[in-house]
Length: 102
Image (cartoon, rainbow, N blue to C red; front, side, top):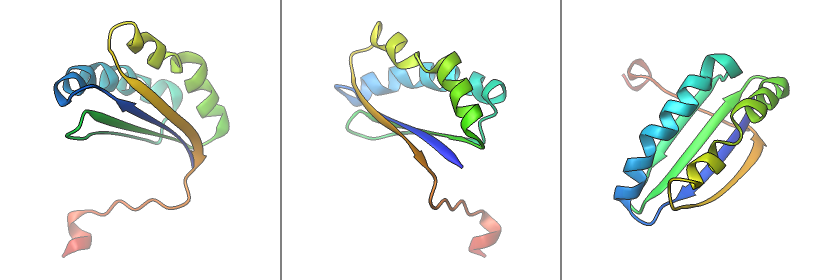
């Protein structure tokens, strides 16, 4: 499984909370089109947003980059933040459910 990770640093938690719906809307709409196998958006109390996108193949990742890879540049026209990110290969991923805890 391939992943693309973005780390966005906003000046405050309030600014990050305002930007979050934009991120979830853009990326949520890309799920079926880009065949994403997973999407996680997390917000931290210091104004950080972490976005992890998962793809089953390099072809699907490239489709995402071609069609939606510019969403950071689009956001920079409206929001003030710093961004870093990287592409990677998922080495380990665990998602439990309530039945696993019982």
